[in-house]
Length: 163
Image 1: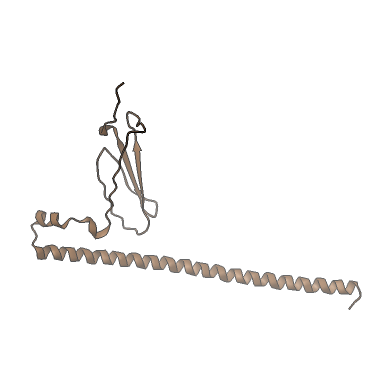
Image 2 (image 1 turned 45 degrees about the vertical axis):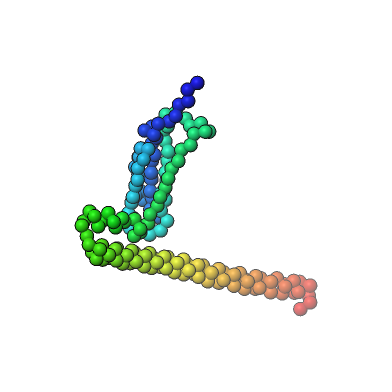
């Protein structure tokens, strides 16, 4: 019996990327090999979904399919040696370019931290407001129950002619 091995050209890999506001940043189909990159202006948690579809022959338990996912974020995504050879940059120019990109990355990180701080402040203020209203409601309930108990006890004692 002949064993059929799935050929890589029959593999369809779909990649979907969504930003924190649930907007699609990337929706693409790839073959057996490929790479993707995306740039997002919104800070926060992004969703990356990798979906494998349609292999002509089903995989048996002995067959293995490997997906290598190498993620690079921020300034580490640039290959400066390639920039130097492509743009014919001197070491000084290359270093200046690296420093400019590091400054830009630091600014983006500071903006993200400001955004997170603002979001945390909003959450804290909202929680504080809810705690305040909850304590006011508890106080009102306590006063209402106290007034009801006083009236009930007064009517009870008047009915028993103890007062």
